[in-house]
Length: 284
Length: 282
Ligand SMILES: Nc1ncnc2c1ncn2[C@@H]1O[C@H](COP(=O)(O)OP(=O)(O)OP(=O)(O)O)[C@@H](O)[C@H]1O
Ligand SMILES: [Mg+2]
Image 1 (cartoon, rainbow over the protein chains, first blue to last red):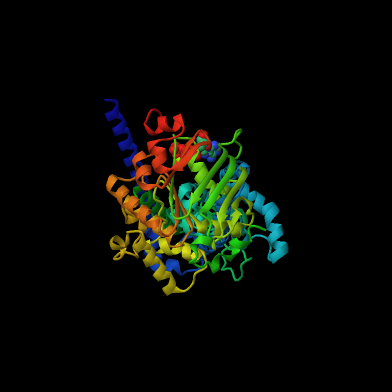
Image 2: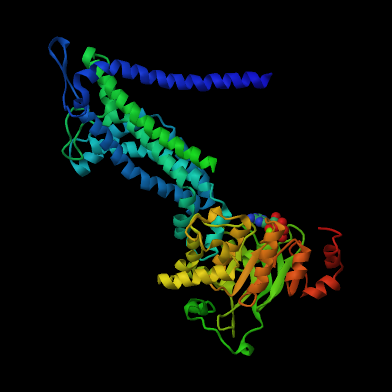
């Protein structure tokens, strides 16, 4: 009896989440129609975001925010992946056990800080440092990318550490018993064993970096311009959407829906890949 | 320094003058061992010889310290810092004329070389997440072997010597995870044998296997003693009596009795040993 009820409720919530997902997609797709018909594939080439006279028509294209999103994410990943791996390896294989607990908790807490706090901290404390060291005017690709990296490192390190911790101790011991060093054990046993979890954590972090709005809005400069060097300000998809949404109408609004749709599809593909990896692992 | 000969492992030569070799390949002398943070030692003043080219069985009830003793003999305990050894564990040098105390080893590199000379096989098979070939070649590569054809030759010899060649020769480059439990365990033995160790330590190597795989492993171990000296922990009395030349009986961290296997099983000196062997406790 209770089992049946429980089954129905879980079935309902499972289908509901599917329909919410589908609903979001349909709505984005629907409102993006106008822009799709007007610009077609050129939307991916146009580097303007100019409403027309009297709010009629205008030229809207996604290339700058798309490039900005990809570049900040790339910078963030290039910094975050090796550092997160290093932290996870340190915590699982090297650190003294009295250190593992407190550092682990600190990392989990860092992962839970709201992104706006990273944004403010980045703007007031970090941007001047970047300006001082690399030139530019503080806000820009590099600042946004680095702060984004700092945001996703704890998250990635925590998942990677958990994946590495699933390596059976006796497997590591047998590698040591063959004369392996800690470095050999990490490289040849722990990393291959935790591979699925590591790749999963990278993909989830990637999804998070792509969609991050608040922190990047503070730090990227929010100007519609191709960056010519790494310290230049530019914009990203979520930032452009957040900044322009309140006043946009008609074609501009539709173009924003189209941008959102692009971000949605990319993130969806990435998260699905991550899920695929996690599921593939637990099925084994 | 007594650790010096360890670093000359590369120059190992087979001596034909058996008589000049020590009779014992290893000798544990009044070893007391305490785990990190443990209030009391888990081994008390253990004395135990490991005879050259013989099989020494370690028996005793659960928790008596068999694994602890075995794991001291290649210092795998040292992966977890904070433990404490007292006494000596002597290992014959490759030439076999002298003995050195492995508890004196401090350098990481010398510990690594020790573990290649004193191999270990665990209760559960532990294939690495790589191919069958790579599993066996792994230790060779770690020990600095570079020449591909040398490695290949050693891998094949080791697989043949570990009675697993027939089952694996057509799938050397498939993942080792696809083998059965018994095959995996023989692969792990091959992996250890490939390093040409002087001593092999087996910790209940068959307790996770079915009778047929167990039989295959027992045959293999009996065969291996021509090449290496062996210490094996087992809960299986038949296995100990079938397989071993010497038997040590342990009880709550003490070594109660050590003797020829026939003597231990037919006419032990200690009442405790007899009670354990006849199954009155344990
Ligand atoms: N990591 C550890 N820290 C502290 N004490 C330990 C640790 N491992 C084992 N011990 C203790 O050391 C004693 C000997 O354990 P050991 O594992 O050597 O027993 P064993 O003879 O191998 O038993 P079994 O037959 O069940 O494998 C036990 O009392 C155990 O509680
Ligand atoms: Mg044990």
